[in-house]
Amino acid sequence: MSKHGRILVAMSGGIDSSVAAVMLHEQGYEVIGMTMKTWDYASSGGTKKETGCCSLDSINDARNIAVNLGFPHYILDIRSEFGDSVIDHFTGEYLEGRTPNPCVLCNTHIKWDALLRRADRLDCESIATGHYANIRQINDESSANGRYVISKGIDNLKDQSYVLWGVSQESLSRTKLPLGHLRKSEIRAMATERGFTELVTKAESYEICFVPDNDYRGFLKRRVPGLEQDVAGGNFILEDSASGTRKVVGKHEGYPFYTIGQRKGLGIAFGYPVFVTDIRKDTNEVILGIDKDLYRDGMVVSRLNLQKYAAIEKPLETVTKVRYKDPGTPAVISQEGEKINVLFEQGVSAIAPGQAAVFYEGDDVIGGGWIMKSFRQSDPGNSETTAFPMPAIRSTAR
Image 1 (cartoon, helix red, strand yellow):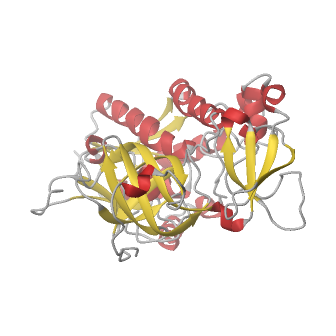
Image 2 (cartoon, helix red, strand yellow; image 1 turned 135 degrees about the vertical axis):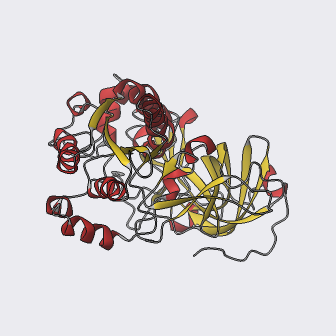
């Protein structure tokens, strides 16, 4: 009998999830390792060697750890679920003129659900992953009492709380994150001390697993036959947000092949830096502007998942992140039904519809959702600016 019960550990073959499994094994858990096969690289049409969490090498690395420590290891094939949900969403968002975040969707809606279903079949009380974040249950007299919340890991450079905003209360109640109180340097030291030196030298992958050559445009073209012909020839529009002027300055390859904030690869030169500031699917227009034209001080977020509170009852001061590496900006959020309006204390650059917005209170994740649109509070006819007054904001960023 194990000291702490049976736990299913998601093992990608990388150093983080491997050390998480080692730690739990040493703490006395009955560990079962599981590597999820989400994507068949050969079907992507990419040109580079297979790498990342779905490669045969990674699966073998995870299995070797399990064999060395004497616990079972399984491979879970979720390619069908992954393709239906993550890849279809990825493709559809670009066709809508938005910029998707497939890793967040996969983490919170595919991998967690798949792990918990298999945990039940294997009589595991809980699951664990190698994410750098913490989970705690709130035990006080506040309105959040009893709820589970993700909070930041202590390693600011590795913190992954941003990608976990979509995990449900039920899932959080059965999840352990062993690495949240550790720094990456400590993880490397632990692997070295235990003789797993190959994990320390193994390169980490930051690519989207089903676009391993980082060419999402090529992936879209292969995924949607005839896409190039259907969307080519739209107008590049140069807009000046100050004067409101707009001018056609060239033709582009198709609106799905551009992202908000993009500067390189536009195929057009002005003698000064220009950026994609907006994408308009209905007219197949890609809007260009200078750096200041990228800034917005408000946005609307939908498809919410709230963790710390069941609902946002009144305007709440937060630090809000609009992308993974975003340090966060002080903002006030206000919930209206199934959406949250966000007003920033100062302008935020390159807010891209389709990306995730995550709201923090101190180190705690209040919740998050998907960005529908951004706006300037000074824009004429903008109804969101009158949703609530903008109070003075004190930053709660760590």
